Length: 73
Image (cartoon, rainbow, N blue to C red; front, top):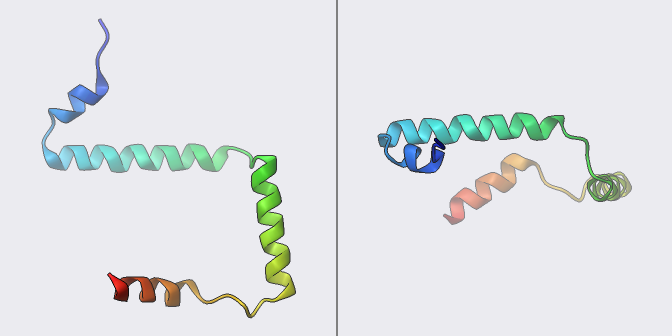
């Protein structure tokens, strides 16, 4: 007998569904962190690092960018 996990999850109370989503996302993030970068990802990161090293003052602090985004919402 096969259990349809999605259908079973849909039957749970809202708070349990939210916790399930959080737990599942944490598990996905943990698994993803263990995987090696693909050649394309490594190439992109190397290019971005090179661009940053060539002009380190070009970027802005993350806090500033996030604050600007929040103000637009």
